[in-house]
Image (cartoon, rainbow, N blue to C red; front, side, top):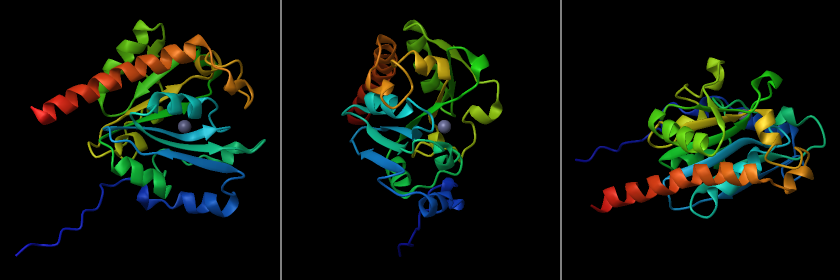
Amino acid sequence: MNEVVIRRRKACPIDSPNFEELSQNETAGVDYRILLRQAKAEFAIVAPHGGGIEPGTSEIADAIAGEEFSLYDLEALKSSGNHDLHITATRFDEPMCLTVIGRSKIVVTIHGEHSEADGEGVFVGGLNHILGTSLGAALKDAGFDIRKHPDPKLQGLEPKNLCNCGTSTKGVQFELSRSVRQGMFSSLSREGRKHTTARFGAFVEAVRSVLVEQTASLTSNASG
Ligand SMILES: [Zn+2]
């Protein structure tokens, strides 16, 4: 006789009801909006702190996802105080986000960090070291300053971190310094982010090239 197996998805962020708190204090469609695209491919690109929280991350995630990869973006829209909408990456429990990442093998999160001392650093973290290394190498070739973040809390190594909550339980987290994001747009204001630079294109293309290549090899392994 078959046993009924209730599959609980790992110890991912469902234990901390922080989105409930957010949604009690902020109005959907006014203070924030959620952009969601579900694609067939194995990767989901996630910007949990988009819009005015970590400016530039929404636009970068959207462009990386393109049509091939799933996208989840929580975009804060307030004229000030957007940090109120920051749910830490190990407690991010917005239900649509959990649905998208639960259907994706590998999650790549895009964050922005703020230290002025970090120059143009692109900090690669997460538990998928193989993919992280490939992405880092492609970005280095494209002229980016690839580093490991000195703060262990910004290395994406916690199993509950969103980036590690795809079905493979190992993903990649990017922390982009303020300077590197600034170089991708005419400015980091809402208006400035409508105008991207060649650096934006170079970053997006480098990441996409690796993900597209990996998708092709995952598909050929599955069929062969
Ligand atoms: Zn973040």
